[in-house]
Every structure is written in structure tokens, then in C-alpha cells.
Image (cartoon, rainbow, N blue to C red; front, side, top):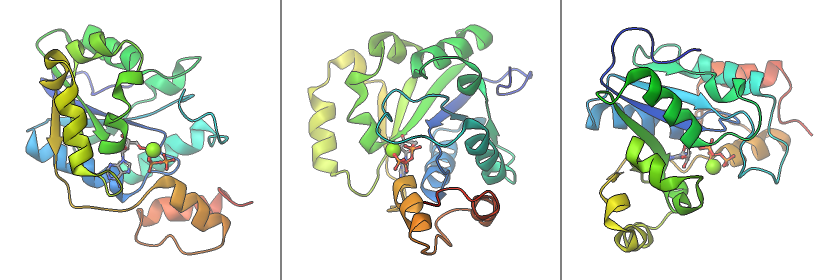
Length: 210
Ligand code: ATP
Ligand code: MG
């Protein structure tokens, strides 16, 4: 299995997502976490079959994986893992984090980066209590998610969960994969919303066209 590599790693983060497609919002959040939390690596984990995205047909995993590879290729601290794509059934964070915990042992600190919108849903995640024992969360601010709402939500969480979630302010990028898919479908530009290599990959493979 691909992971953070064979060398002993002590502190890394998982950036989970559908990455359909990956864009600068994801990359900015990952780079900010690397810096603010002194991480050795951010591991991008494209989901295989995301349980919360049943409303639209998610693009083939192979395309989402290759776009993620293209997007992180020039950053020496970013890697991509196929662990969720290789696992049959729905992708759950708990299974991924537990797998890395087993590989690296209790001395390696695992973080999980999400956007603020995703953190608001955290109580619906499978096995959340165990998940938060195994990793800490970095919640990146995201346009569209009100900070007061977020603080209100965090303050109501039980202490064992609350202390495992760290709020991280990142330069606001009102970019979403949904908006990018819509733009492509409408023949509008997606330039400067995502790396040029990914933009070219989308065009070459005719992704998101009606
Ligand atoms: P979609 O519109 O299809 O839901 P998305 O842009 O939200 O796509 P995901 O793959 O769902 O992208 O997101 C993966 C993770 O990245 C989530 O935790 C999400 O909150 C976070 N994220 C996505 N875009 C941003 C952004 N612009 N700023 C901060 N975090 C983001
Ligand atoms: Mg999303």
C-alpha cells in the first residue's frame, strides 16, 4: 500500500476528499497545515466511494487519483495514497486512520485536515469517538461557513472531542469542486482555480462535460 513512505514519520496529516477535481482550496489548506502544525508530510487520500456523495455520480477513481498526483507533483511534502480507492465499499475516515495507526504505531501523531464545512458534519462520521482518539482534526476556515456558527458548534462538543479539533485560519478561497464541475459543463473558464496541469487533464479526458 502507498503511504507516507517507509522512513519513520512522526507527524503527518491526512487530507481526505473526493477531489473531483482537486483545486487550490485543498492545496492552500494542506500547505497551511504543514506550516502551522510542523508536519513532515500531507498525504492526500482520494476517497473510493464516498458515503456522503450519493447525490451525483462521482468521477472514476482513476481520474481523481491522477488529477491529485498532478496537483501535488511539485511539492516535496505532499504525497497521494490509494488506500481508500483500493478498499471495497464506502470510504470511511476511521478505516483509513486506523490503518495508518497500525502501520506507524502510537508514537506517530496523525492529523486529519478538513474544511470548516466538513467539521460541522463530524458527528455523523462513522465511529467518531474512536476516530478522534486516533487522530486530531485541523479544521480550515472556508468561505460559506460562518465562524460564529463554527465556534458555537465546537463549544457544544464534549470535551474529549473538542480538544482534538484545531481551528486553522487560511487565506480564503471561495473555490469548490462543485463550482468547477458546473463551469466546465457550461463551457466557462476554470483558469486559476486549480493547477494548470489538472485543467489540461480535465480537457484532455473530457471530464465534467454534459
Ligand atoms: P464538492 O463541491 O464536490 O463537495 P469540495 O470543493 O468541497 O468538493 P471535497 O473533495 O469535498 O472538495 O473536499 C475535501 C476537503 O477539503 C473537505 O474537508 C473540504 O471541506 C475541504 N475544502 C474544499 N475546498 C476548500 C476550500 N476552498 N477551503 C478550505 N477547505 C476546503
Ligand atoms: Mg465538499
